[in-house]
Image (cartoon, rainbow, N blue to C red; front, side, top):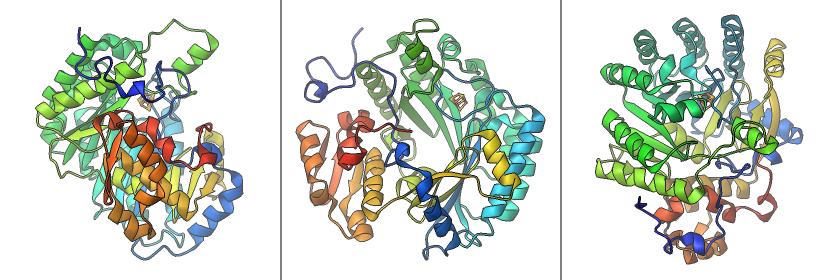
Length: 449
Ligand code: SF4
């Protein structure tokens, strides 16, 4: 069987230290600097920024963490619970609503329209229709979202029924994201997914029928048990399902996954993990097939059918806009200060019971750190425009980041002019690996969380 991309001898890995095997500790870069640099000492800065009026014109979004899942996937690294009953879920959703109501009275938030709302998790579609409606009624009263540009909602196929999808549509969801991950039942089962492929085939016609503005499907390249044959089938079957966009993540192994713990302890069955070169080849193959089916690239991970379709939540996060992250362990960003909520169930609920925001740790970013964060995250789009940074930071990013740019260009991972930086196809396939080249030295080679 031949690989469609990265033929031996033509791989930039020969000029750059490669990650080689998939080993425990790899990360998907979602913020800068790493969360391990956030601490209690910056919590006063978070409280201060929340007590001040916002910058004029600054946009605000709302992320809601629904941390419940039917089962814990063996590769999952999110804060999720699989053992909560209906009463506990109701208690959590009440706390979540109270948190948002608390924010609605703060000077930094009061009376600001929401630009987007993102229901993430966990599995937002796990909660019942009754719970969803009750939650949304309270949230919309606290922070209206009727004029928001996007309401996004993550779903696990096996948790959906037609009435639940109708309720999701009725609360105003514009972007529905379906966690398909793979369409091979053996692979889904092996990796601990709760759903099976027949559940995907059952719900997709309902989703299309309900006319969501955008339907995204997520896939993971490199699930345990994947082969070239199974991956080709998953790619083709996903195209056949007709989503508006398809997102492919290469399987990571942060420390807190079931697989990572098994590997480190030596417990559990031996697992065969695809190496990074193979995962990149699978990722590249998928993108070639999506392109042939009429999709165009929207970021390192996503291809979409309509070239100018927007993913408001992603673009807001990657351009440093204000966002309340409500829910256990959620991450917020207001006016240059990042902070995270209490990551433990009891602490999160306890703070809200005492009418306090459940703040846990924070990071007050300097102007330089805000700039680097934006450059790093926007590089995931594939191209970035120097004029945007000149206007926002009064600084020439090409000159400022000359050393990493020259180094990465020599390795064939990007090209740049005086006006823009563009990652090559190979650079996009390994974007999370090259981003640390842009970091301040003190933030490199650090623990991530
Ligand atoms: S469905 Fe998503 S959030 Fe839930 S356990 Fe699986 S990967 Fe984690």
